[in-house]
Each structure stands twice: as C-alpha cells, then as structure tokens.
Amino acid sequence: MASTSCIEMLENLNYSVNEIKPSPRMVVGPAVLGSINSRKLFCRVAGGVVSLLAMEQAGKLKSASLVELIRALHQIFENDKIDVDEVRDLLESYKSDPSEWLKYAKFDKYRYTRNLVDEGNGKFNLMILCWGEGHGSSIHDHSDSHCFLKLLQGQLKETLFHWPDGEGKELNKKLETILQENQCTYINDSLGVHRVENLSHTEVAVSLHLYSPPFDSCNCFDERTGHKKKVGVTFTSKFGEIIPSTKTVTQENN
Image (tube, rainbow, N blue to C red):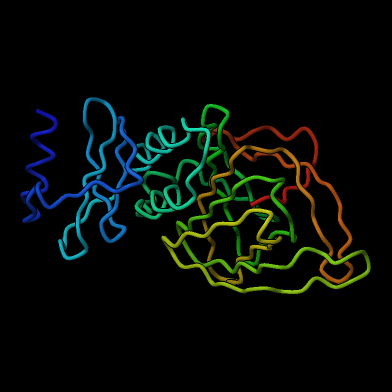
C-alpha cells in the first residue's frame, strides 16, 4: 500500500514512473537518494524514507520534514565514506519550517547559541545555531571535520580566509558570501578557515549545521596577527532542553 501511494503521488504530479531514472549515486535502503534537477520528493515507506524524484516543472514539490531529513542522514552516514554532494543535496531538499525546529531554537542575549538536535549515532552532530542581532563567530577551523551549514531563517554572512601564513601576519580573505534562507554551504579545513556573522541589527538568524565527525574543540584565529588559540565548545541545549551552565566555555565552531 505504501509504494502504491507513492506512485499515486507521482501520477498526481503528471509524471510516469518510467520517467524516473536511478542516479549513479543512489543508495539502496530505507532512504533511496537520487536526483533529477537536484529536486527531491520524499514519502514514508515501511517506516523509512524513500526519495521519489520530481522535476522542477512539477509546480507542487514536497520537501522532507525535519524528522525525515534526520532519518535520511542516518542512512547516509551508515557508510564510512561521506559523499559531500549527497549530504548537501539532502540538506537543500529540506525547506525550512519553523514549526518543526522552533523547539530547538534557544537564543542568548549576548552570543550565538549551539543547540543539539541529533547525535547521529556518533557519526555526526546535527544542531541549530541561533544568532541574535549583530552576533557572530570568531575566525575558526573545524578540527578536520566536514561542516555543512543551511540557513533556516534570516541572513548570514560567511567570510572565508586562507590559512595563516605564519605568526604576526594578517589573514587574507578568499571569499565573502551572503547566505539567504534555505541556502546551504560547506567547508572543511582544506578550504580554509571562516567567520559567520548576522549583520542585521533588527533581525535574528537561525541555521542548521552538520559536523562529521563531531568535535569538542577547535582553533580560533586573530584576523590581524594570525595568532591561534585552541578553545572548547559546548551546547546551550540538547534535544530542546536547556543545559544548566556550570562554567563559561568559548563557543566558536559553526
């Protein structure tokens, strides 16, 4: 019955099942991931998630819910090797719905916050970062991890820098990007170090981040001198519950 309902969904979009071609990157399992014009249509099948492919011209496209997104991420990260494009495509397929993530969005008056959503069976951390007006991070690395960022609300500026060329030298900028709602970006240490900022003084911003493997410390850099300092990172909340503060910990990874 479940597969029939999925076919009916495709037929309602005026597509024939025969038009769907499997991607070379398709993963066989509860979450079947492929792409036509990088657009995906998800439905539940036997308790899992199946990605049914729809073309852009359909007009009525459904994105995965946050719950379905997390299930699909777990499926992807069962593999030892990460396909960066596959993860990014999946994150982009999720269209921000505040009713799904609002319970994780814990703000602080003085700094941005890191709120754990899912621990990814030790393979990744999925979290929501909340940026008050004018909040930003220091320039930092990612401890040899993959970092995916998807904007859920507002606007963020990412500034990418080259790695420091010795102590006492100013960091050189590589790229500045303004991220809009539902856009996704990626960084790892081979690409450089970066800073993320909410430039608005009237609007907050919320972003979804995935780090693999998870880490609990990173290096921060002085833009003027390139000086490096290792800092610990922590969470403001876990699974929607505020963590009582026992000590102040610098929070710089995003």
